[in-house]
Image 1: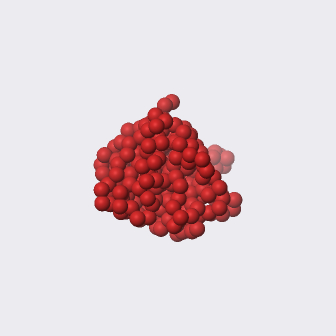
Image 2: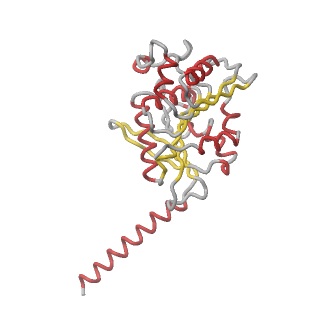
Image 3: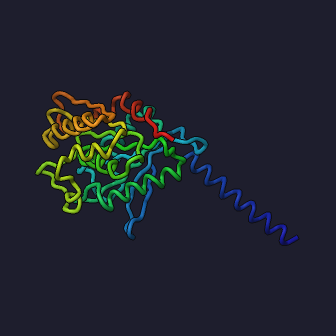
Length: 265
């Protein structure tokens, strides 16, 4: 009798714990604080879950790479500029999971910063029932560079890309750290990255009055993709300076285009 009671007791405990976990996943939405650990260093990131999130269905997942101004280790600032700000203004337009890693100061999206971003993405896909056939990558400024380079190093991982005021060759005013700079192709850099991207759908945005990242960066990348038969869209905003991301992420067409793409099974 005692053994039966103990068995029943532990069964009830397990049932309650399972119910609490499911309730937590079903009910907690919005921007959630998360962490990953790389080489004994903990990195904070955030995951956005839409209000109608449920683990009963698979979800498209976006990995967002912020720019140089949002670097740090607070795990928050990267959600306040760009895609995070657009989600807060119009959450109904974003029926997807969004992962927001944060790059450390004086670093770019290369090496351990790339690793922690991809680990945050993979853990979010697993934890929140993301759809591996609908994983997307977008970034602005420094994150626009990261979009091209990370996607070129991981072909077949992303169903579509969107680079905003980014590029391939950084301007003299924003030199990459030596380890990252060493990976920039020295001959035909745009054609080299375009070839690695292959047929992945890409939408490139830039303001023609950008005084931080030259618009020629996006023009040359778009032309390289076209020359190689890539699947590329290019939008250039007349009179717009570096902050073109607010306009991009506010356009309903952008998110509908992004989420319409999927990897072939």
